[in-house]
Length: 225
Image 1 (cartoon, one colour):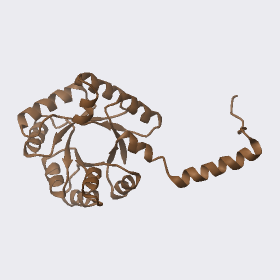
Image 2: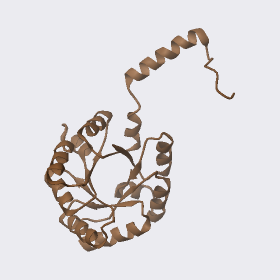
Image 3: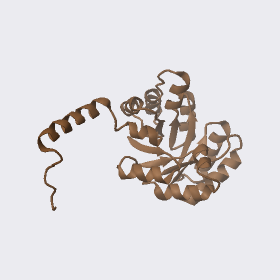
Image 4: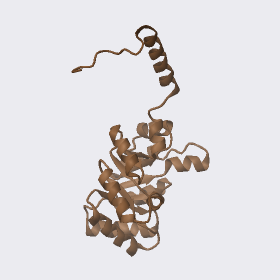
């Protein structure tokens, strides 16, 4: 499973890269707008900071021609951009048009919230279906398992569309991985939680306390020092 950072902040992206944690970046209209008024400068900074693909969303949801035009521009902006289109009749129409024109253009469909929608996305030929598991769980206050049934459905019909899950917490991250999602994207504050667990911290503090009682601040010799 690949891990993407949901961010339009190059500093966050660079920090996550230093951890070796991420394979790419997802953005959305809210993240881009919060970064400032120069949308192209923001997008260039994100692409430059990302270690891999960048998902960038076309603006709007009910005009297939406008969505297709933006997709063409984004595709020309960088070959690392995967164009995100909305889950709507116009969005699905745009996927079909663009795939006929440019089969190699990478396209994701976002805001997918049901198995039926995921079927339409794959049938249209999109490369990625972005399932909003985390937001759905928060909105409904219950577990929402869409990855496993979508994975089964895609296998039933031979669809090759990859599944992207929107994660929130370590539990859901693990659930997505077990269910077979291809990509999990998380905001920076949620990504940091993957490294944390109260048992891990408790045991590490115990190890350090025992060590310092005997050796104080000494450590093993450092090679080459």
